[in-house]
Every structure is written in structure tokens, then in C-alpha cells.
Image (cartoon, rainbow, N blue to C red; front, top):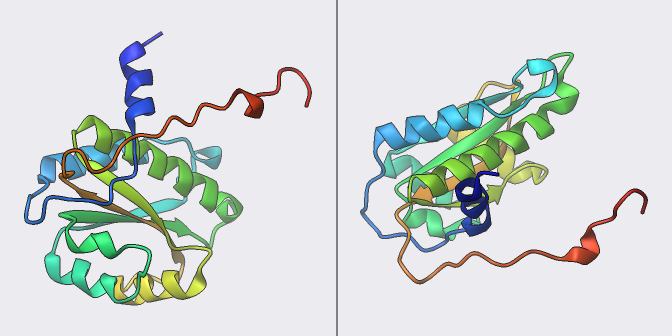
Length: 172
């Protein structure tokens, strides 16, 4: 067992408090994207695309449409995960995108950065507004926005989510 990896998973947390003005390197953003695209996908069709946002003007424009992501104001970057919706494998785009998001959240934690998964889809209005700002093609559905930044130390903490009553062995 790789205890370090298990510990990384257990220490992952949603970060909503970022050091304003602290940058995230292109190297880290690319590593995060690589981890996301390494996620499993239905029939390996990879029904997802990523939009990396590191320009303050675009991040600020999105704030207007995302009441659940006010902390985007201090985030250094964000990544929007979009599902491809016009393909015979499109039935699985939500699973592909979710696996992508989780891989990226773990990579962000491994980089010593903070992140928060902000849902867009199935809130059609939010997804459509993000699509409009980013000018995504019609066949892409923005599913999630991940805020990324340098976390303010001591503000956000991992929660112990272990609950043995949620585990069923053999049969329910």
C-alpha cells in the first residue's frame, strides 16, 4: 500500500480562502491538466475538454454568473471541465468529467495548492453563462469549475468523512 498516496487523498479539502495575488505556475497548471486527462473514460473516448483560466479579467467576469464561487475573486486560476455532448459516447460525459475533476483535485493537493469544485451542470443557467463567457462550442457543456490558488494557512481543513455505516460487505 502506498500510504503517502492514501494520506494525500485523506488530506484533500475544498479550499475557499486563497492568498490574493499569489500566482500559480504554468508548470503546475499543466501538471494538473495532465492528471485530469489521465482519468478513466468510457471506452477511452475522453468525452471532456479543459479550459484553463489564468487571466484576472476572465475570472472576474465569471464572478458575475457564479454565486457559489465568490472565492474566485482571490483564486489565481481556474479550470472549467466541459463534457462533449454530440457523440455516440456522450451518454457518459458526466462520468468522464467527474473522474477528470477528482484527478485534478488530487493533483492540486499534491502541488501544495488549494482548490474547490464548483458545480455548473446541471444548473443550466450557470453552465450556459460560463459557456457564453468562454465562447465554448455548442457541443461542449461546462460541467464544473475548479478554483485554484495558494491556500490561506489555517483556514480550510480536511474533514474526516469516514463512516463505517456507509460500507456494506457482500450485500446491502
